[in-house]
Length: 350
Image (tube, rainbow, N blue to C red):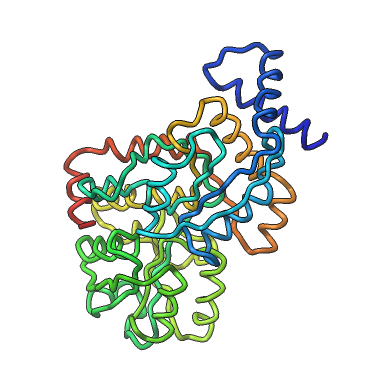
């Protein structure tokens, strides 16, 4: 089967799940219409990440392969738009970018919960639930690493040793998780905000500017940087921040493992919703329904593509995808959580 034939099959299947109520013949005809629109187009994937990190890696990997599953096989180029912990790119895609299906957004995983945590922030100029989420190639698990000189060897030590950790911003997972651990676990962690990305945060640990770092994820570039330090005994991995343990670190507890009350576990489960979102990609809220369905199907097909998976393996980029419909549903559940739970989590995130 050719790429063009596979694209036709993919789009027809996607349209079957929409409210268009077309016959099989019309599905095929509609795929032709979409192909006419996208043929010769240059799609732009705007990522909120700086060059060289994990988000940038996944954005460029997706851009190299997804076009084969889009009718008309348009080219996809990547533009980096870092700033304001991902808000700059999210605001642009929501309010400024064309809403015609030619712009794909690659957002920070914490963008989806930005308004949840900071609903009075005038810098958040979007409703995360109104984005059309395409999906994520990876579901994330964050890691808490500490330098050997910190005196912290285990999660239990966090209750007796003061610890500084590097962070990009106060509203980033690094800082929010630190405050949650202080309140719910009795840790003594002080986030130091202002570092420019995960690599800069790790450099701060290496230079002993801080005692450690709590990551929101663990991309290949991130792991390649800190794992040699673990092997050398220069840092210790003492906790994981996610719904489950990373198979690479089966003996390291998650924050959920350490919580003793049901409500405390629920608070972390809501916070870890963004971990499920991993490395998310979106479309603007005004993109036509048929193009949303097609691009979601193209994204899902790319996640199963042999060439895509082979290149991801060569790049040590883990693929554990979640689809866009699941992400939109997850955000709806988070934003309708019981008021008392919401207020407590918002207070911890301030």
